Length: 154
Image (cartoon, rainbow, N blue to C red; front, top):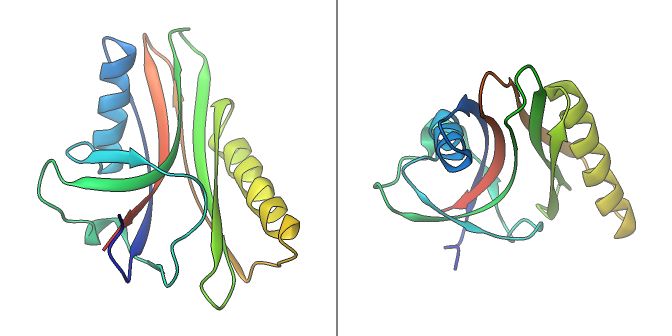
């Protein structure tokens, strides 16, 4: 359970590794979440959640942290992969999180995640006041990973 009032932080990172899991771990480290235990959650911001900069996310190693995240891995040399997260929010604090990952650039990932977040708000009959986005891209050398997340913590 996320403590109230929760905070949220958008992060992204990319890296190489010897295996898919090692590449994922290295991308988590690059994003600043590598020493935390991620608990995957779906895509609605907790009530009252407020944004915080990544450097504010200072928790003891091994701490459980809820996160909505996306990642892409590739073992094709030269392939560009990307991952992005977008948070669409209203002034009253309600918001949704959308994640995207796959082959492509960070710019393409940002655009896709933003479009998904806006669609999710529209489906609820809402218009976001603000959309926050973070993305990472990686050109694979041997085995790479691009990772993006919204960490929910308090």
